[in-house]
Image 1: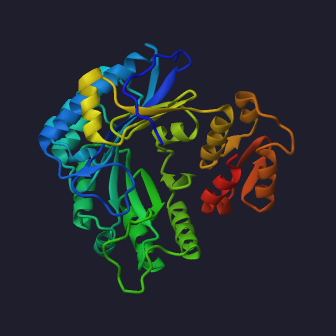
Image 2: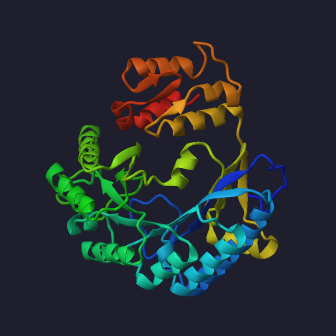
Amino acid sequence: MMRWQSGTRRRPVDQVNSLGVYLHIPFCDAKCPYCAFYSLSGIADEYIDAYIEALTRESRHRRALLPAGMRLTSIYMGGGTPSLLSVRQLERLCAMVCDVFRPAGDTEWSVECNPGSIDREKLAVLKASGVNRVSLGAQSLDDDILRILGRRHRVAAVLRAVEDIQAADITNWNMDLIACVPGVGERRWRKVLQQAIALQPAHLSVYALTLDEGRCLPVVTTRRTPATLDDARQLRMLRLTHDRLHAHGYRRYEISNYALHDRRCRHHLDCWSGMDYLGLGAGAVSRVGALRRQNVPDVEAYLAALRRNGDAPHADEWLTLQIRAAERLVFGLRLIEGVAIDFLQRDYALSAGPCDWPQSTLRELQQQGMIWRKGRRIGLTLRGFELADAVALELWP
């Protein structure tokens, strides 16, 4: 059981010289059936205003504990649906970020937007504030598939949002798509991919549909349609995705992410590469050095605590060297270039013996065709990418 605490113990953080910042905006117009992130729907404007005030207090408090010369590499505003905020609320939130964190010109600043809640006025506010990357939660370009997924917008709204993003001169933008939807065959999925490619996003994130226990889709095409595709069909769909996107210049750099012209998402890359990140807002997670912190996923408790003492109720976990090494290895293997195995011995003081973790497991995975080795660097093969979750479980100490 997690023990939530409200105060932050001051600790030395002089080793932190750069990090990313994540701000969680946990508000949506409705909850998607497949979404596992903490969010609330049907929230009044006054409640969102109170949340922005609390987020401002937490941001100031947490920033004060970091070194003055710290370099901010990225800002990511996710949710929930940040674009659900009004123009006034977005202006207030962005002004706070600029005031507290003072992003430089080369800081990547991303904001998640939904087709049904973004418009040119909001995009103008984001652009003027310094936002230089937008992630559009399209999920599909087929109205029937959107209905199956329980989404409220339709393809027309996606196309309008793309026009608005282009009109705002935001050239670095991502489109989210969900693959492996029940009742959707390969021909139909290929058409969705072609439509997405035709819109020329700089980046595409393609996630296989997953449903947590107790969740189900609101619509299926027939009574016999399963809740999710079996493993073999999922692998075929994901292999098709890889081949089609690669044929049109989208280079895979992570299990679910593809980019044109090296427009890779810096925030996600930094997290997968083991860099420190600060998570702000209800339910947000941080990892700075050996300390992982999770804020309570409860907006009411979050607001009450910030009114009292300026910090969010949270749970701390001090990570052992072995856990930090395991996370660095497993997350690093999500990247197409893999990881340098030497870091395990150099940075985490682990044994390099052939029978010690992770050497023996890596050797077995290589024999199974899941992992490649080039000198002192290791990475996942295409087969390894397809079975990445299973590989991660094998590697966990």
